[in-house]
Each structure stands twice: as structure tokens, then as C-alpha cells.
Length: 98
Image (cartoon, rainbow, N blue to C red; front, side, top):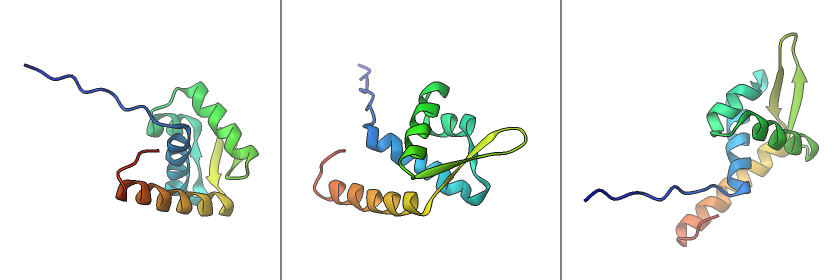
């Protein structure tokens, strides 16, 4: 008998963490919205909305290049992401989920 695994949905904070992780990975070169969408498994529209929120919060910034807009993580975003990873680790230690 084949078991069907239930898909785990991510919380908003996990999605934010995924976006910050993608932006951090690309460093000062930045990452475009299509790549964010692919790497975080979000629709293009949802990725744009989430990135706009993160820009407003000062966690990432957008830079226009001749062809595209690229997103880079800010120092505030790096600090937030580091604290988020610590929090995730603590939750795993006590078997809780975000």
C-alpha cells in the first residue's frame, strides 16, 4: 500500500528566511526576482510582494540594472537572518516547528 505524504506548508517567517537565504547566497551581485521565485518555490507575483515587504522593512534592497532589478541583502537583513537561523535551531532542539 502506497502512503501519501502530506505536504508541509511553510510559514511566512520560513518564506522570509528562504528569500533572505537566496539573497545572501548571491551577495553583492544580487539576485533577480525570477531566480528568487525559482529558488524559494514561490509564484512570481508572490515573490514580488514578499520582496517589496522585505525592502520596506530594510532587510533587502533593490538595485536597478540596465536589464533587471536585483535584490541584495542588507546588514540588517544579515543580522535578522542569523537570529532567525538560531531560532530555527532552538525550535528543532525542542521538536517544535515554526
